[in-house]
Length: 240
Image (cartoon, rainbow, N blue to C red; front, side, top):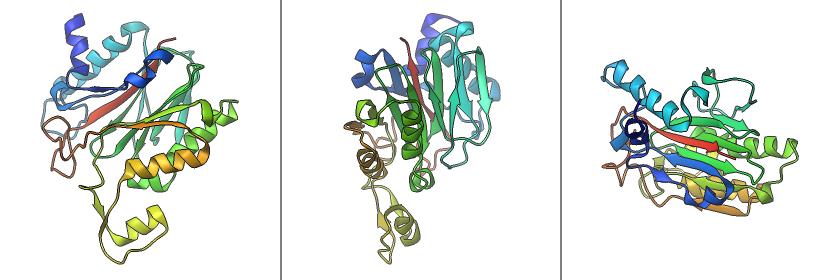
């Protein structure tokens, strides 16, 4: 696969510049790169060609690419460095690697792609919709970092493009599940702000969030609320 073809995966992407000095590549693909989900009417060969382009972009045949069937839970899978290829796991919404060279990807379309990077080279990618946020998947990942002696105060977190608080209305019961307060009516909520609050309580000090909304900026990203079947990816990999 040509370099230009593999580089097409970041066409229209939001790249997390604040991770650059850590040697960490993190980005959320855009509509221009095409859908990475299998729920559209596109021929599967076209979708798989995009996945092949992603693998080429992160290292080709010598790369490790970890993904999983997502279930809106809080399970975070930890990956070692003793394998090569494309790993497709089951029933997980987060990935964590202590070793450089492991690319990890989550599929999103309104849910929040959460990226975590530690100066040691440890990284994580999380899929956090309202269920994952209520299940505290970000806190689960941070606890797993801590279990390896990596403190939250040293971790940088970025919440990528997702549906914004002005566009995202949930039922009273969902709002109560997320906040502990029942407003008695459908209410809007900002998932990225809530995730950031959870991370701060855990000790994370360096937090950034995308200003892009998948619904407001639907020309650039897929949005489930806008009726899109397509899915973009949140990808992270420590290069060093």
